[in-house]
Image (cartoon, rainbow, N blue to C red; front, side, top):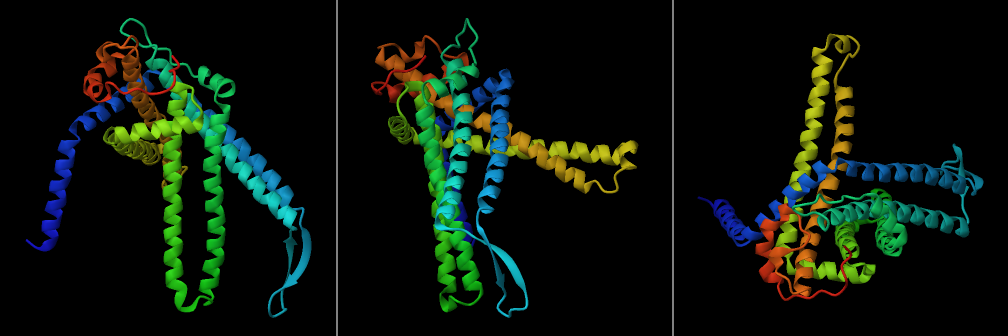
Length: 376
């Protein structure tokens, strides 16, 4: 055996040990995801929530495109020529005030789009929390979607605006960085950087990676903060801190729930898209009426795959958000029992599907006090 084989076997052994050490967290994560599937399958109307969000974002994109065309047309038209003077062309020149308005409009576009996305997640979290704390062995939980929209305007508009503001700032920074990157690439392509071209490219890639990591981190913190906002009614900053501390305390459970959920989500999107594409291909190849009208099935199959992937992505995003919200609701449920000096195994309102994993979580959480009053 060569050195590569020893390394592979060593990494496999370490991974196996890690799985054994986190076995309880893996079981909890699988149970959470199974419950998420049941919740979504019993309340398929939740699919309308991301559809409404996409409709609003699409309308906002068209409005933004119209406003940007109007802003671009405000510039002064000047005639310019190439270096040789053989070809002339027209160009728009904008003043500093007009450039500032363009960047401001772009930031507003990002902010509103991020707010719609945050509101979509918030409505789903409210629905899951409503179901969790109204479900029992005798009554069926109230999976209320309208309540989420009402709570946005009544209670948590400011928190959602602040969370989406952070995302919009990161998007704007990344856009400015990509704009500068294009200028640097054109400069290095023309030979202006000389021998420093390779270090510059390496530095740009590192910056892009850091910005992407920052975006993912803030997005994940926002999602957990929204869960805490729904459960405690606290402001965004307090909820984000509490959510972050909760993640640190139960890092393995959150990591495996997110990791396993991402795997199932990815497999679900690919499987649904491939099955629908195979159906389209079979209809075009083995249905005489369609086979005579279509010269090649490649184009329709690609369109069918893309449409199926978008629909599957919508459905699976609901699934992953439900899993995260259930995990927060479970910890909040046990914490409520601790604050009221009740037995964690006898929650007054707890879905039957969650009862089997409370025994595993009750011991490490027992005695922990969390600030804030939970909204039932």
